[in-house]
Length: 280
Figure 1 (cartoon, one colour):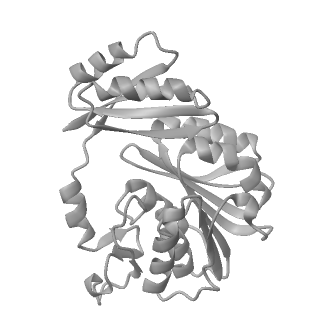
Figure 2 (cartoon, rainbow, N blue to C red; figure 1 turned 120 degrees about the vertical axis):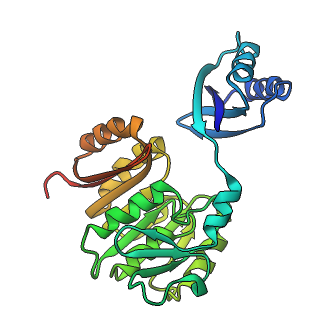
């Protein structure tokens, strides 16, 4: 089964246009939509049950000062996703993730991460999260200082600590991430001083440099942050949350920022890469 998407992009400052777009979508058979904003542009992603209904909706938006893009994606089976959350997930060579400690096998020899399914925050079930963890496994984190940007549940920060990092800092711009970060730190019995977290921007950090930085968010956001991130990088940068079709853009912008590719992985339509400073 597939979902058929119509992406509508326009100037984020044009509130009247956004209202008009939403009003016209209301009279279509769209099953729902969400809005994102990046680089002064707003993008409304609307879901439709069929190609015909999506294309008919596009015709209703004709004549507006918007850019339209048609896409297809595999439909998410939310019941299956929930059922998966109730059993352990094996990630890479060393990790097992489960929503409760009682579900962790006692004889598996893997590093446990206790992360329940919560809202849209990472639990390891998504390929982009798994890719980031697998790349973390490939580097020596013993005694390292880590940074998890756009941390969500904090799973990447927790994985760094499990792999031997001395301290990781996690942060997210979404205030709703505060509770999962606090609760997951407690579930995994991590002392607060080993995994401090905050809600805010990268500019709020006092620490100057990190041995490993992990970012699992939208590629356009990653690209916009690269100059600030590189200024704080003393080791390896891991980026994920990137569709394979956007890989070349991320690599190009990273190299422009003084980085070189150190490793890369793919799962399905998702790509993740590790980078180091070109001079190192």
